[in-house]
Length: 332
Image 1 (tube, rainbow, N blue to C red):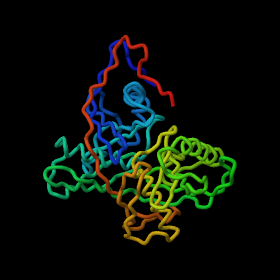
Image 2: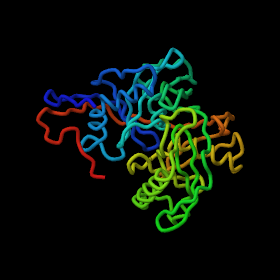
Image 3: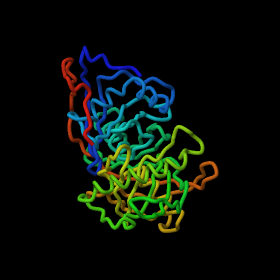
């Protein structure tokens, strides 16, 4: 892995948004172009050559354990306007719904993609595939962004685990990344901010228990693998723990698609019915199943998720040559 030449220092520009409370730090300058023909290749390039930038922007003192961001890059071909490689406290994710909503909002705000009509279509290449999005524009401002996700499916339902001293059943579903989904009632915990530390501990235990026993991988693309997040549900609410104990402040876009796939399979949500998925802080995404597909041997659904992003700041982050902390640290 390449190491930064910290003797010369670093300066990286970002534009920050939040989507339903979840941060998204967009790298707008100070880094070389990501190399590769596909987004997955560019994702590998970022890991091998730009990981010090991820650390600089995510780690303390410039970020925090729950920071999220992305490198903007070219689309794979002329069928899309832009691409993105997502990053978080533990590395690089394969999907990010809240980040997609923020990225499209920024692209129109910054006139990188022209606002052609009150319903402007923007196509984005992400590691899990190509997403068609529609930005709703009113009074020259993006009011919301709706993305049509890659096919989502249930990998396994009724998986029994021993976690936190009790036996629980979880489902594993894919919505651009793999999520373990379990009712919060199994642990007698309300979905409230005060209980987030407990959800983090249990989420880590569930992820470890699943991955110790089996390999989780997409049937058509082996690089899309592993349990990315653990979603605890209660009614239309959820709290999602992902990466290394990171907690989604938004309702989790790709996780919402995974939950829709599970609800559809169980017959608990009629096709076309809107699920107003709510996060631990009360933010909402409007979501629905709009079609069906197939992923290898698995029946799949096509989902749409809609939310709003808001600008929070423009930044120039600096790593001085004599800074003893370097690219930073994480306490949690």
